[in-house]
Image (cartoon, rainbow, N blue to C red; front, side, top):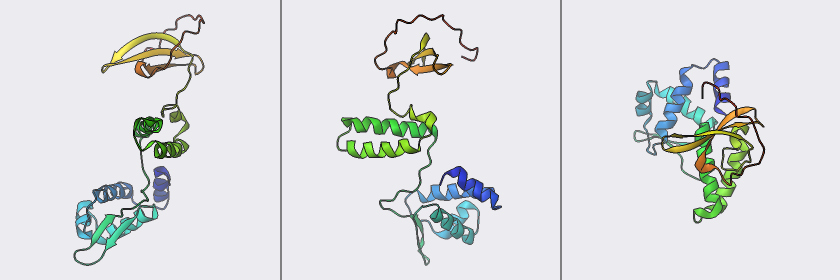
Length: 194
């Protein structure tokens, strides 16, 4: 289930706005790998032990495997095993993971090529369409070059993309096999923001 859907359900049901942040803090604590006592979690989160138990149950409903032991030495921890909990990545993190998997899939990382191909296929299925071209797959573009700029030690090509009717910036070290088309164009003026 996507994070936005979870938050919408919680808000629609009148659940406190603090709950999503608290659940994420609880998950962050549990991901440290140690076992946490219920009282210790309650103190860290500023809630009662009963609220901790309810929040742990919510994590379980979201697909996280949380083990709990009873007694004075008991506590909670994320279960180990083959099933990973849902992964929440920003757009840039998803692209970085996909690019890493694409590199591993081409055989440059020993013993993981087959698993990388499978993982990359799964990741591409859930990437938003606006990110799929950035995720390691080569795309072909026809552009009208404007100039080269350097930023933070990297060179970029600033160009107008007539197929997208917009300006684009391309990292020069990522350009593969650039070729002149022989097509002539009148140089455009970039927007002032550029």
